[in-house]
Image 1 (spheres, rainbow, N blue to C red):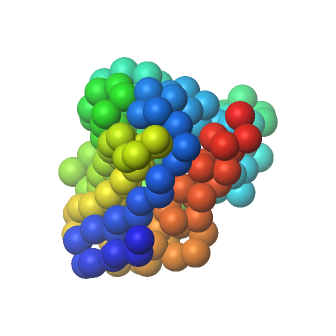
Image 2: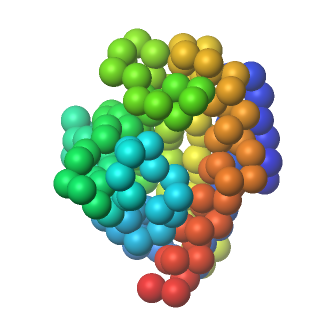
Length: 157
C-alpha cells in the first residue's frame, strides 16, 4: 500500500512471522536488513543499531569506529509498537535540535498466520527541508523498499 500526504508517509507489508518474531527481527536484527548504502557518516557503515529501550539511541557505527546518531527510541512496546525520533533533515544530515525531529512509528499486528507491519513517518512540517525529506523517504529507495528488504531478510532467517 502506498500512501503519502504532506504530513505523513505510510507503508505496510505483511510478513510470515508472529508479531513477536517480526518485532524482534525489526529491532534486534536491524543491522541484518538495513542496507549499507543508507548511512550518513563519512566512513562506510559497519553497523546500524536500535537500542532496545525507551530513551535508547538509533544510530550507525562506521568502519572507522565513529558513530552518527539518527534519533532516539521514544516508545518501546514489544511486540506491538516502536516509536523513533528521526533527527535527519531533508539532506539526510543529522539535526541535533529535537524540536525539528520527525517520528517513525512501526506497529506489528496479527494478520491471518502472519503479521501486518505498518510504518508511519510523520511530522515533516517540523524538519529542516521537510518536503525534501518526505519526498526522499517516500521514493523507491525509501520506506517501501526498506520494508521489502526487511521482509526478505526475515523470510530467509
